[in-house]
Image (cartoon, rainbow, N blue to C red):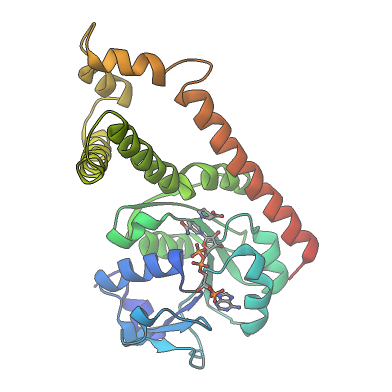
Length: 275
Ligand SMILES: NC(=O)C1=CN([C@@H]2O[C@H](COP(=O)(O)OP(=O)(O)OC[C@H]3O[C@@H](n4cnc5c(N)ncnc54)[C@H](OP(=O)(O)O)[C@@H]3O)[C@@H](O)[C@H]2O)C=CC1
Ligand SMILES: O=C(O)[C@@H]1CCC=N1
């Protein structure tokens, strides 16, 4: 018995197999999803997927268990137009901004679950937040949670209003962390290290600190203090990074706020445009 039993029987349709759809699919296949149960609709599917045993741009199964929508919000109207009305299929969207109301207009009477995952799903280390429409039963939400739980952790939201903020934090967040690695590596070079050594040190420092932050019982603030010897090197570095006016905190606040606002804007545009 696995979380994929029903899906392996009835099928999963993935519309859009780019960076996010591909990351989830990679994670699902690694954890027991049968490639033959997956129909991928993507006009320019990347070559790496062509020989994976998937049903590529093939007719949809009659009654798939799940339809996963993973195209750019701006492409969603086109993508929705390509999919027939499906009864008894869970519609699961990962698109930023695109609201449940938009999907309800496209699929009247359907069960919709909106999810915000992130790309570490590809290695089973994602975090997804989800919320269903009024029709979504506990069983539907459990199914969505099982699917996303196969590629990382899952949290359920209380209100769809939280989704843009989640997108601005954890959906976009891996990019902030990758940029932090880039910035640390460049800073290492600026103090005399080679590019290769600098990148390796930055990458593993972020990976190790992230893993410790997840594993440890202590709060990140305590973990930070554990690194910081009074009058030592970390204190000197943090004096710059934790500057109340120009440090990371105000910068991160503006970063997440800008991403959140963009999610809201995308949602408004799409609702105005309808399907
Ligand atoms: N990337 C990320 O980290 C995250 C993305 N998301 C969400 O995931 C969704 C996809 O983003 P991302 O994976 O980055 O985008 P990508 O452009 O990498 O992937 C989208 C894929 O869908 C294809 N596509 C375009 N139009 C259609 C169509 N009508 N039918 C089927 N497939 C189509 C694209 O093909 P082509 O390239 O030829 O246009 C592309 O391969 C977005 O809505 C985004 O908000 C959510 C969380 C994180
Ligand atoms: O940049 C974007 O719009 C998508 C949503 C979250 C991550 N990538």
